[in-house]
Length: 246
Image (tube, rainbow, N blue to C red):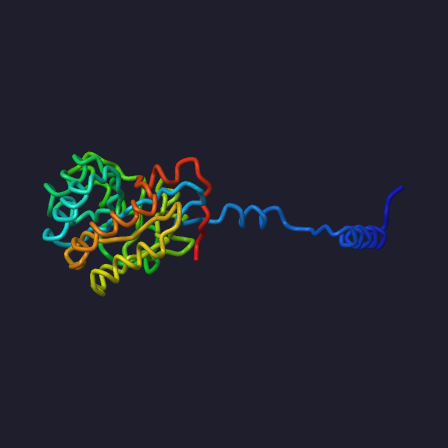
């Protein structure tokens, strides 16, 4: 027996009403999938372990990077992550090679220091590929982590970078060292805001004129709080990423 169109519509309405009465809701599968699969940037990880990742962006200069490396060596910090821009790496190959030789993790900071969200995906891919070639030429490393210039992104940018095989790394604690607010202010921002699983943003560019003085105190005070230092890759490996696009 065939149902009339009116009967079919009536049956659909009754079924929907029954679902609502039982507390269920109807959602399009594509909608649910889009929410769970939305592009994400990584700010920190959820963990009870007192581990943090010290990260340093470098895009300009040769006066600050080596003193930062000297501090890390003097303080016996074996693990940190450096995000290098392509042009800086080519202009200062010996420093980039020293970062690699000291065993630190290398990520990409892009090529031109411009906001990715202002440009199409083709431009983003080109810039990231140029940076990859520059970093690999000097250090032999093809980065799989990227921190976008100025920390700029949107869901489209992240999706593009993910498609290229990159994880987009942001930060949970910002030292604001590039503002040069005073050594103690830099130290306090990091040591008072840090949480387990944190990614800490600092700079080893020449624009960060006070980080060399602040860094030994940051390292010492974090250790006094019981923290150990790991690379970003170690931090996120096997851990649930808690932060998403903001």
